[in-house]
Structure formats: C-alpha cells, structure tokens
Image 1 (cartoon, rainbow, N blue to C red):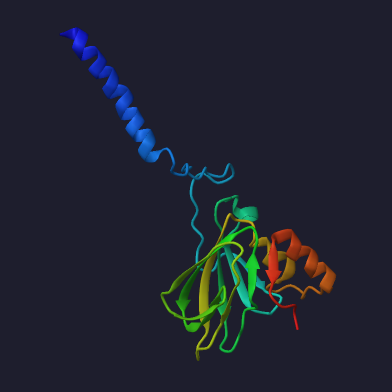
Image 2 (image 1 turned 90 degrees about the vertical axis):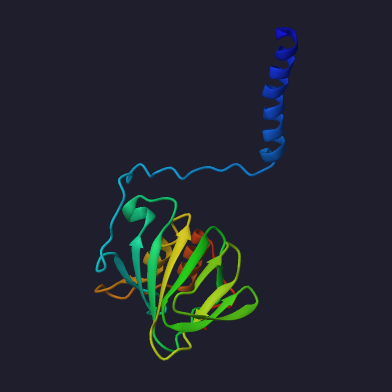
Length: 192
C-alpha cells in the first residue's frame, strides 16, 4: 500500500507546484515599496506646512512631501491653486507617473489628445510619457492635489520657481531647458 501512495504524494507535490507555476508564473513580479532609510516611521504634514513656491507661471504650489526634504522615494505630494482663467501648459513627464485629484473647482483637462471636463472629486492617472494639461474654466479657484511616482520631480518646481517670500528667480531660456532635461519635462509648445 505504501508503494502506491508514495508516487501519488510525489505527484501531488509536483502537480501542485506545476499548477501554481502554470497559473501564476507568467504574471509580473510584485515588489513592495521599501521604506526610505531616512523616514521609516511615517510622516504627518500639517495644513500650513510644506515648501511654498510660486511657479514660473506665478501659480502657488505647495510641496507637502518631497524626496529631498522628507527622504521618501516612492511618491511625492503637492498642491496647486489655479485662479479662474489660468492654463497649465500641455506637457509630459518622461520619468514619472502623475496622479491628479481635483480637490475643488472645475476645468478642462487635456489627456493625450482628448479634452475632458473635470470637477471637484475627480481623479486622473497620467502615465509617464502622456501629454496632459489643465485649464481652470470655472469661476472659482481650482485646487489640484497631485503626486509623482517615483518622487523627485517636485524638485523641478523648487529649481524653476521661487519660494514664497524670496526674491523672484530670473533664469534664461537655456537654464530652464537644462532643468527640463534634468527632470524629464517636455512641453508640447515652447513658452510664449
């Protein structure tokens, strides 16, 4: 009797492994984010905290979570407050995915070649390499919350913008082009 059961057990061991391998072997490998060495305890950023920047377009941006400041590599977290009539130039990120949440207001979002109306509560995922832009078509400020993954692109705003309360940075077109290349930022049309 043990002579018969032994091959069956062997089949079950190999058979189960074979079935699992056949079913799941072709799936992409999943890896879990590793905590950043500088910040493995978690982080709370209060409403008034963050790096407050006026962008090149003089739009208020707050960097709440940053790779450089907070040591978080996987994702950054920022806000942008666009007044009515403001337009974000159509652009794409070569190195970062972006997640956009319309916290307040309404506008028209360009996603690749499509124009889409967005309003409070809408969420948009923009994969790296996809053209996108946002126009505030409403009558109130549009507050956009956005994240980059991996983190790091938020430093583009620091390099090209001016921290609130500081003298405005004056840069040449060549200097802007250098930071655009450094951070993988491509505009569809050049600055007017």
